[in-house]
Image (cartoon, rainbow, N blue to C red):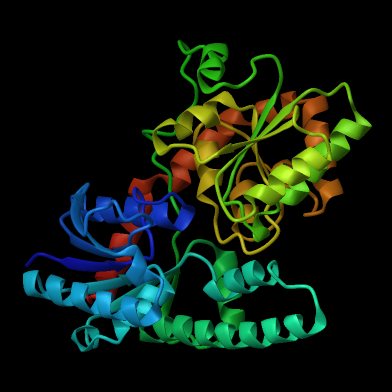
Length: 410
């Protein structure tokens, strides 16, 4: 009998780029290649996408953007999609990636007895708290109303997120850090708690080949050929620490004006205008560049063109797919000692970890690299070997498929 998987996510690659969305699609398409019939319910980031499409073996059932922005409309749309899928196949397993979509789907009686697995990408509760607090208004009464409203929102989020966990036979975490953090918020341990890391496509992310010219690659990408390139790729949001990274670049320029470098920041998000203003305020246009969203097909080229990758996260880094993508290309990663980054980088070399998350901690370690890059360059082969051995998608999906079999009692 064919195994049928219902995957639930708010967005997914290739519709939208992001760590959790990329992981969802990479897992789904590989499960489809292994014989699973995978149906994904997801929302449209733009209205131009079709309602239904088969993408790399995965059945995409998309919800209109307008419906995705209203709780009741979203619930009705999810209900319709489940009805449609259930007429085509008997759902064997529900795989929840997003707690909002997951919770609304759980309200459907057809899914009541179907086994469920939740993928804990990060805490929705924490993400929402950090992102919303960054929007705190000025003024006493406005602030009081803001925090009362925030408390209600966070309570609802915790209920929905907790409902997904309570209904699941297994919860998959991307790191030991994520599992430990989960247990601080949700103390019940009814489900299996399994750590399975994220992965990287080692056939797409690999080092520059001997016959490839670095200068030509940089020219093709519009990058300078005569100075070190520091790369980071992040959603431009509060917890990512990008303000600290820009200020760290400013400290380096002030302390060592002769150290020439370019910090390239790829990605999009709500802080784009603020970050651009910060660069201009500190007169860093020659040293820091926002390059926007990097298309997926040329992303590996940016890793290969760079000298070092920087991950300045401030909080709740559950894993970091960009970290293992960088490592797979042989690119050393300098990361703050936050969450899953510690587990990944300690497996390569502890010197890759910043001593803290402050501007000074970041600037001093980058300055050390710029003054003497050889010890970091010596780690390139170890970076790639670590990524291939521990984070290839084939290995990761082996573990997920194994977990699904345990949940289904097979």
